[in-house]
Length: 637
Image (cartoon, rainbow, N blue to C red; front, side, top):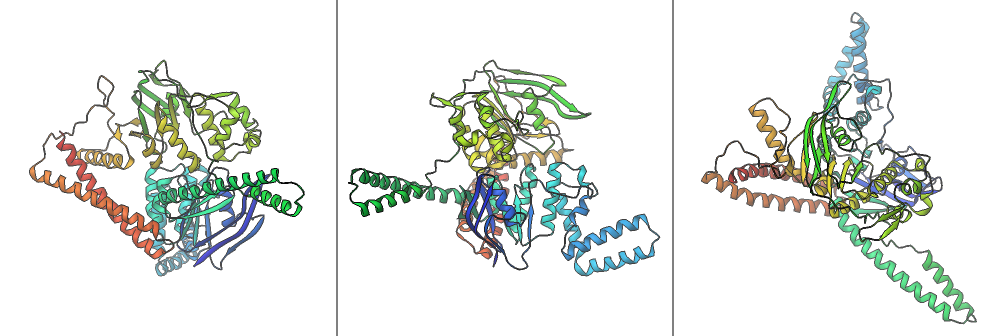
């Protein structure tokens, strides 16, 4: 069943054409991921689909009775309302009933002797009983809790930006529309909430359209990727991994078409130059053919972010920090943290919002004064810090001036010197755009510009604070490729599992202002080992923050004691061997199910069944891997 259709929709913003006669159809039950370069018009397209903005031309058809709900990056909420009041503000009968019941209950608390209110509350209670309202109310509060909102009576104007977004998301999930439109739902959200949201969305039957940079999220949740590529929409069946395969094939075909067009154009121009002008009719036809070939624009896949920057040499001494402590308004953000960075270290910091990760990076970068402790950097260190605040961006300054004042000439990886204007073109800022003001940029474009300014200094130690927030998938992909060739040290604070898996060797939990020990990447390995350690801590006593890493005299991570020292029994050795075979089997089945999901197209009943099977297989695989890790560790003692 078709829910919505776009036909030949165009939209222009100022002098910038964002959408050029695009068409799109969304069916019931589809889960679609929309990706594209920052500033390409993704949010504008979402707003047009949600009915919040009109196209300049073309037609948007929403079929009768279809309800669309959009959760924006910065939701507009009633500042005077409480969380629950905001939650129940909807035109649906179920939400109206919940709102009326909550309102009557609160009024009765202030007027307990009012018989009229008592009668009204009784009637509403009976209606709640008949319509399943109690279950709906419990579900609403459960979703809020899962999204990290526990104070239901808090006023909206007292919430942080992240909390406000989660309230808006909860409202959309509780009163689910036929088509749910999400704009960057994982931005500034803890990883535990992201994982819960993944599971929730994969089991919900409604249609979904979302913009997100979280590629792991795209892999788990969506069945179709739509790319907004230079004002056009290109659709790919399957999740993000399948999209990468199909997109590569498409661009290979288009690149071949572009080469063929150029060769044909070259031959036609050569013919015109050599042909006498007397052949009027044929000459005119040839010129028209050349004009047509010059108008055709095949995608040669050259309009992509490039980061071919050099890196400075890094000596043997990088960083030693002892007893780092910082408090704000009587609350300790970082508590007695010791930290050592050796050449080649690539570390991911993982922890809930407010745990102190950003403060810790600010301290290392010298952006805040220490309350206690000492930081010693090596003499050869050239530090680059990409923070969340995008400091030093002046809205009135021209883009080219912002980069040139830092580095008019930039050394590339092959040793050549590149002008700032050329480097900006590599970062998808064309020459005409470079003379615009920073204030005209989208949020993602501002982050891309700030990233370029961070990297032009050729740092050999990089601190990245939530680098995936607001950066498009294409820029993130090339940033990862840059970090692959980066020979310096890296510390990155991020909730993006895909990015962590691609860029770091160790993951360190950061909780309650304390830095835990190092766990090996990727994220799934970290999660299993950290979960096991946390469970052991709870069994042995009150849960504490993870023990800090121990290092030997040469700076290497010291081996961790298991606390048992027991070798495996013969039976356990047999179990370990059997588990290795089982894990391989589960992984093969996982890959097979994922491939079936990618190939199932628009058969949403099959997609639902396959997704359920995939979840069961992943749970079995996780359980087997945890037991394997436990036995393997004891075997090595």
